[in-house]
Image 1 (cartoon, helix red, strand yellow):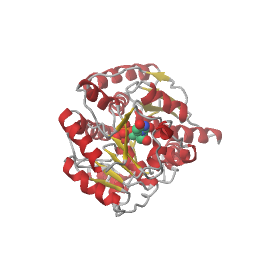
Image 2 (spheres, protein in one colour; image 1 turned 60 degrees about the vertical axis):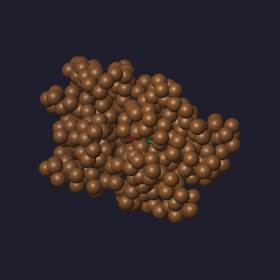
Image 3 (cartoon, protein in one colour; image 1 turned 90 degrees about the vertical axis):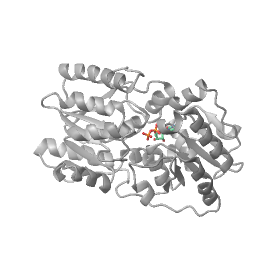
Image 4 (cartoon, helix red, strand yellow; image 1 turned 90 degrees about the horizontal axis):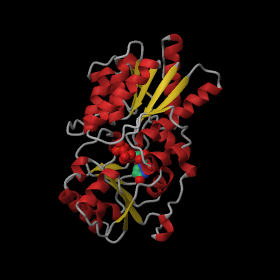
Length: 370
Ligand code: UDP
């Protein structure tokens, strides 16, 4: 069984890292599985791509489509054209896509239209219900053509059943991003800025923002940054800035006073920073999951989440995008009354093994039990 693993953007690299390791474990046991890593080039610089390959020991991609930036449609179209060309020359058995970025949807469509190729989606079935998010469209389109659905929660499985997906194609396996976090917990690295900023455990806040709703309007972004800075009551706020947000800050010469803006951190450094933070303020999906597993209070500046278990079980709370909700949340954090969280079912470091053994079972005897 030849599996194409598709990765294009930062959160994808973290998810495929554990799947590659699981495939290599299966190979070491003599099981009949091979993979090709296809990097679409959606994220391409050292901060957003290269450092993840180095730190997580991800092998060099078999193909790099080098599509670069562009509008939603331009990027999607370039990925589809380049990946289809590869598949027509050298088809795979299974195209495995992860998450919800443009690379996910583009490769899913290209692969599904080629007879004989099956499509597997890791992180299938999650839904925010917010159709203004490009990611929600990518999720819905991908799941509408997927053959094997690997889910991170029972809620995601239920979302799929509700749309008519047969339960025999849905496999609740847990979370591959958390596999990578658990595996690397002892390797997390104190970031270089730690000493320079005189950071101390539990005495700083980590901030990340990159959703269009929060960052595309410079006035809104400024208001959010100012409110976080004042709510933090003198506690240092460290803000590794996503390239999308950096572009807006630069273009409009925004000043985030009271906030330490830095370039994106490598995976091991970023998660060290989160692990020892007083709390995290974010609009990222993946970070709400990691904060949940590390038991770090997490305030999410969004109105909805496709990962409800981070709120019902974990440490995450949805504050919405209205800045006036931020100060009371900080007050609760400083008062020590943030709820303690638990760990969602099957977020145990074995999700990628479940995925690989499920696919092997399907390919060897047509059946799979998770
Ligand atoms: N991340 C990182 N360095 C940073 C910020 C985030 O390594 O400076 C990692 C983080 O640990 C998580 C992933 O990037 O695993 C989340 O990516 P992002 O927020 O871009 O995407 P989302 O999860 O919202 O799709």
